[in-house]
Figure 1 (spheres, chains in turn yellow, cyan):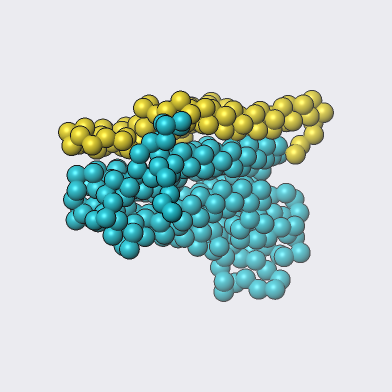
Figure 2: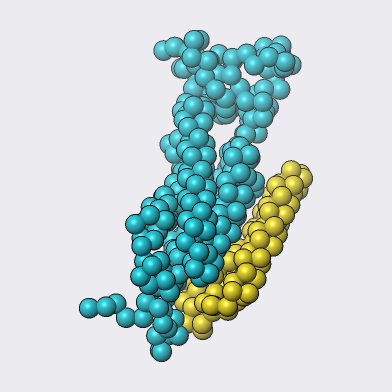
Length: 105
Length: 266
């Protein structure tokens, strides 16, 4: 939701949200469809999470109006996303570090 | 004393205070859920072959919930647009719809939890996992009678069912219970967090998410009810409040966009 007072612009924003909602709906259906195809696990994970990232980007960019936000917001979000990526990377590192020893967590 | 910068932007940040506060809060939320997703990856990678359930959860209610969140994301924007346009009636309509949709989400989630409470699984001393619903009449202190699921979530369960079918012990056309001696079982439980790590992380993540939805319902209901008085006294600030709660609601949807495929599809 952007900071605007122009009625035409407000109507445009609402219209845009319906279009994005339609896109999200389509992507969810694609995710469900792909889940039924017997791929190997890593391919399922890659495709499924890839679609989720696209959907999340749509929500962030259009619903949360990150496309039209102040620099400060980007800095805050980039920091928290990097923090999360590091957390995931640590888990992966721990897993692969021990996989050679056939240790299961 | 008035709280500063509730309507106009602060010169140094370029944002009004509530918006900056919400984004900072959302940043902390990203880290919170990031930690949980990290834990999920760790548990999933570390699971023994065939022990991590595959598509054990019913996709239909989760799909409906996804649709609910997507639609409610639009209705909350429409409620904000109605405030901006000075239409209180439309605001109440769209905000009311958002609250109803959010409540429906919680209702469907509760139904899902209810089905988990009544869904059982067991592991025999030969490491076979079978899932299904209990036959209460035939279950007693010595015997567990389980009506097996058509689609076994664990590889060992599928093999066991095939063996039983070949032996004629189970009719393919009828859901007849399979009887297990309790002394032969190493694990028997309903699908609660104690069942396995999958359900532990499933309940942790979905319950935390559901708590966010419930929290949002309380705030949305306040703005729909007593909080809407501000529409007449300070409409610009009220619009900002709706914008900020909208940001939170979109974030709730964002988290679900990852939870849905990770827990239900992959």
